[in-house]
Image: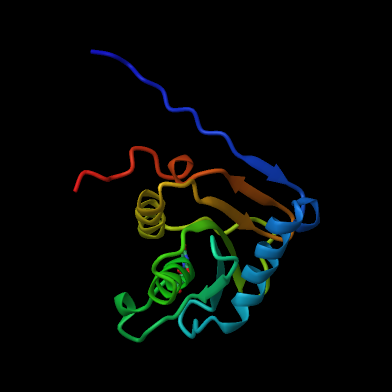
Length: 157
Ligand code: THU
């Protein structure tokens, strides 16, 4: 038996203003994207913005449905839209922002497991790290690659 430890590091910022200009722009896009959320059931609005290697930023927001599992998170809405429209571009970064009734929370909304798996797949596809920004009004967390929020990524097939 061999025991292993996985080390995860991330950066914590006090606000969006503290980010570098590129990340600040993406964070602001995610906050803007919260406005298009369709969340009549949870009333929790989530916005996401994906920066592509072609320079384009694609937004997404959570879209709920009366048949609950038919709805989709903001992150996957953004990533699937990006891949459908620009299949050859790499996803370099994704920002996520959320809060109840469309008001940005003080602490970050962290992506669900299914969204992390989808991020992992697009990172494997591009072969480049996809950074993740979790944006809130009193705190922003930055992870350099998907491995840092989903260790031991499934990529066997
Ligand atoms: N939601 C997201 O959009 N992203 C996540 O990573 C977690 C949750 C949405 C789904 C649902 O519309 C609402 O937030 C409450 O769970």
